[in-house]
Image 1 (tube, rainbow, N blue to C red):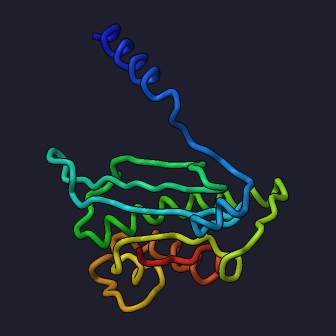
Image 2: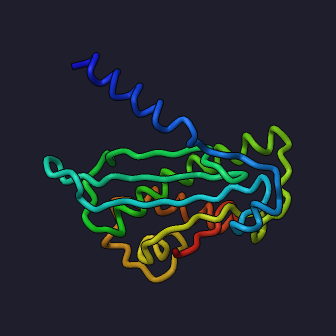
Amino acid sequence: KHLQAAKHTLRYLKGTVGLGIRYTRDVTRLLARDQHLNVLYTLSDSDFAGCKDTSRSTSGYMILMNGGVVAYYSGRQSTVALCTAMAETIALAKLVVKVKHMRAILFDLQCRQEQTTVINSTCVWVDNSAAIAVATGNDFTHETVKHVTVKVRFLQECVQRGIILITYI
């Protein structure tokens, strides 16, 4: 079985040798994609109760810089989410932890952003308006998400400090 999997992997690599992630310093190419040099762009998403055995959701995120992916994650959440807003909020919190870490590294490396976003925030694209309301502190019922209060407060603090700018996609 292992030999068969190894052969499959080698065939895949041989067939995709021309594919890959291209990083660029060409500002015109980045601007054509609405991106700027050395600026982090992020996406966060989650399914809801996707695992048939445990009813746990799967979180995922992707962080892009200079036209290519620099970090990604996909994994099952450690707790069972009771609603899609909770599943998306958990995924968003996981992403923001990584964003804060990467921003600190870029700052230490003196990696200057060519064009900053609003108040130097990292743009986070989210496809769930309830998760955005939770993270920004606008119009959400605390009772429905009180078991994720710590993650909610973390997200709200990052929004208030201008570390992230959450955008609906």
